[in-house]
Image (tube, rainbow, N blue to C red; front, side, top):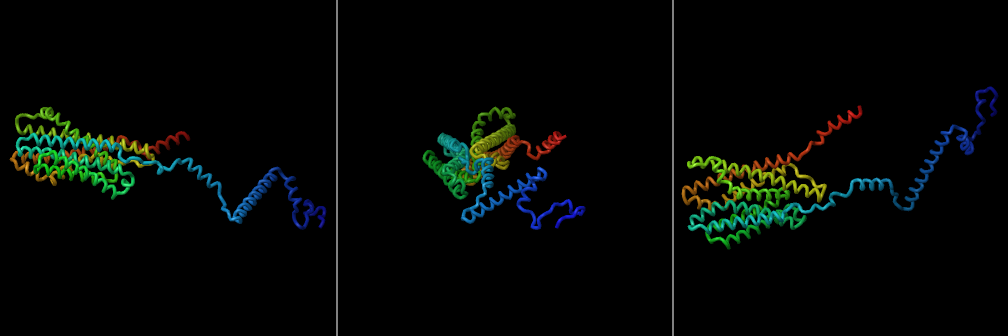
Length: 402
């Protein structure tokens, strides 16, 4: 139908009834604005790429092959490069630093205590004096056996490797067995070198018991904490022996005179000074050892968790607990020797009672002072938390924005 001049459709060109042809569609964008051809080209290109992608996926599926998404692989590869190696692949290494040195030093200390006790007993001219000297020397032998049993049990478990360390039952059995071996070796040495008396058997039996208990302690899960307890306890025992040379000047300093009351008061203050200094030694040594163990573990395995404050608290209190445990072993296993020594005279009975009370007080002082000093030293290493830093960072950001 031809449009009439002046009609409403006069401005529109004639169009075929069948719709747009390919020629019309191709030529119309060229006559339009410049943006329209670009849009049409992009749309056409997108459709073409979609058709090609669908064709490739269809052909791959039809051929039975898998359709691989390359973008996911690239993302995974980028994540692996950013994160680095898996921390679980880093070897952890030895769990207790310096365990060989601790074992050798503790064994040497036990041998020194056994030798000094033997010399004191053999120097006695009468059997009664030998019993009294054996009772006085028994705490030193038992404490040394307890520390040696713990140290050598740590060494034995560490020597067996991670297969034993990572299993609680095997670790406990291996540690207790190693402590038993140390105790039996010490008992054989006592029976071969000491005189064959009733006191000899008591010393040998309590030494075995102390070494076994020490080995059981070494079967605990946190081996570095036990190692810190061994190191600090050994340091306390050596300090107590070295402190004996300063007791006479301290007696004079605290007003010891000719009266019994002044001597008792001076002895009390000397004992408290010794306990206070021993607790400080225990706390500082425990903190130093755990700091060394933490740095060593961080070098070997950066993903290893850091020890928290309960570990430091237990390590600082460990030497005091060892001293109290020594007193328990003495009163249970060596009560017959203490009874013999106390039955010699009234003065010996009073002396044994006072010595037992003094040992208990010393263990309590070392326990609390060691734990407190270790916690204070650990607290000084802590910095401000991340939550405390956030408000300051926000204020700085706000200031920069203004």
